[in-house]
Image (cartoon, rainbow, N blue to C red):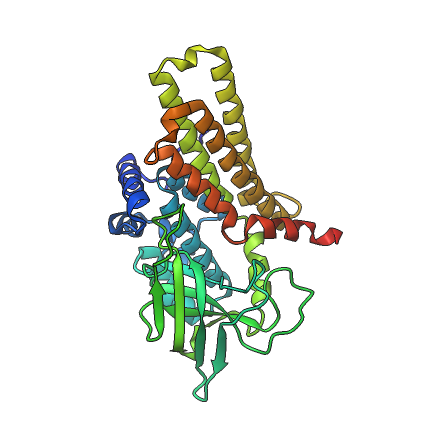
Length: 371
């Protein structure tokens, strides 16, 4: 059952604009400036920022709720919001007082949109074999060189959280995600040597500006290092414990699919059939279950929050795809038209399973204690 409105809600006019944007970007495959502008001005980018830095002091439950709501209208923008919140939360947790003072207020105001740049070709889902390196310079700064792939927000972000190798790679069996000798750096989008590339033509999440990010002898100051040197795996592990989950995006997509399907069936009088009504109830129950585990993860009430967060992504992403496929069968030939909204939502639902940590990696992380 939907909860009462709160400061995490976007108004109906904003959601309508995001829906229109989703329809446009499904065809163009490019981020929509109007949608990104709305996100910047919405106040939602300040959700995880502490009140002391001008934010809303929101927890993972509130972030998940906001992401799910935005995903009902525009999953691509919901992914951008989620990634920004993830970076803001890491700065709030691991940043120095100077980093927090310099970045968090602007992030809360929407002046700095943040993105994560972790993935790269050949690194594997667990990010064990990074080719991106950061070398210490005589002046105390760092020189970053490498290339990142599947970076959501490439080209539209003002700040990237970059994962790089800062010492020789080691055979690190202790870490399931990331490896010893890796560090995080905060890199401004307009810095010399930062080159985004949006030539990647995705099937889903086409408005998320997901593409490549090259770092060509990118020089940053010593204050760009986030957290302890060489301890990126500890920061990554802490992300899961917060309860913020990409499963929230899947919940929003599934809700949008249900609404679209109900409207179609009702407009054609098909809900008069008991079997159809009962099938819709079954799908609705699955969505409610996905919403429940996402909210449970965000509340951090589980005995093992990290594992619950992983389960929430696995279950919700599966439900998102399942509901989309079931809706396609219910819509019959109406859903077989290339430009139908259902197909866009189904492609977006499939994309969530491939986003980090991928569902395959989530299974490995959950199963690691049994190996």
